[in-house]
Length: 404
Image (tube, rainbow, N blue to C red; front, side, top):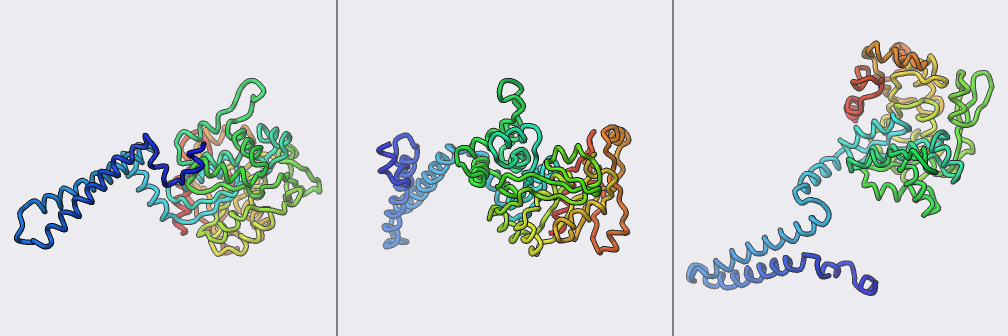
């Protein structure tokens, strides 16, 4: 501890066992020999013997060898040296990618993020924090913090470590931790240590080495309130789904006063703003309900794209068309998306039957109302092959990046 306090960081390279000093001395010896050879060669150019040339090239070789070995030794402490060129290449390529801000929550947003991280390190995810079910709901009640579940999913999606998503998603199945995931507890632990949710999220971003950043729509603990067409009102995402009925609009309760400044900066710098996919009233819309975010999106110059769901949500968007999804987004945001992405390819019959048993059906599409509003629609096959009706990250992101 005494040495750590008195030694500047630059001098710690001289600690025993660092495997740096020997190579630094080798490089220094090479530079000295090169200098001696050059000093002897210049006055006698064309007259002297071969030994100055030997010093010159020998010194140069030692200097290069020493620097190469020193760099390899330092990099080996961080990663496998053979992986460095690939990592540097990928990072440099991704640094040239566009600045994208994606809004939403749940599975839909995390899938888009997995696609975006293969093209850019300038992605900002703004995540809804109003979920009150499952592990997230229990932690909200116990600690009085915003919902962490969707944040954790998005942190895992943008992480540069291949094993991290599985680790964060690990769910305990016994004892007092039964039902909780490691990722949720990780974020709650950071919150307990910092006593500030915004700071806890910043710490999580730094620790997990993300290709981008994940931020809450608001760092305040808020709940979602829905007003239905029949005049009834319900508070809480779980209660909203269970209540069923046509939703007129949703609100945050209480109205949040704060958003993270990083969120506003990202929106202002963005080259593309993406909404969804995800549950319309309980994921997509809550992610931009805080008034500062709405104002920032309304003033942003970047094009705004809404990715419509493939299937309707029971108790939330029963019978909704793609146009009705779009109109609900525009009504709550105060800005109409310039582009809407809609899946129009056939869905296998066995998949449709499985979803119909859950009360979920394909979102129907009619191009005429979009044309009347002057909205550009990107149609095509955006579904991932397999037994589920969910978006393919590669297909969606390829269409999105074509707009930048």
